[in-house]
Length: 229
Image (cartoon, rainbow, N blue to C red):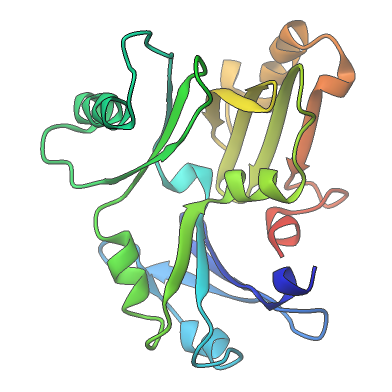
């Protein structure tokens, strides 16, 4: 627990940044994202002033702000190089040649689907340039970071749901490994409306214990910022 309390976390949603507190005596600092690329973090210096000059920073991006994909396991893939090639081809098909995104893989167990994240071009460099010399220790999706704080059961089918202030993310797990990802808008309509979507998912997951919210926008539940702190 002590290491977690000392970890500085910068959490980015589509329009806001959140500097999470290092401990109970600190408060969260927030600000707007602006600029042509949305990566000018207004007022970030206020949060940085609460940190040591040598403090490294964990950067987490909301599920709605970065592309996520899940592809089936391919029997012919037998090496890490082949997995990277498969992910690169997937993102080139979705984003176009020369897309410039930084691809990160969630390394699967043998036979499990491949989950990958595509960071927007230059996001690491642009964020790092505003940290006043501090380094980025890790950059990942807020949803994967939240799952790591409270690991799911190691067996069975589980649906983990995360509500953030810019959208919803659903992570389908099989024996603790991601096998599917869905994203929905915060104010969806029709089949994308959360109540309608949830009714459909309860047919796929009839056991109520198999569906779990790890973060929510409801005031009665823990927010993503609280989960990540």
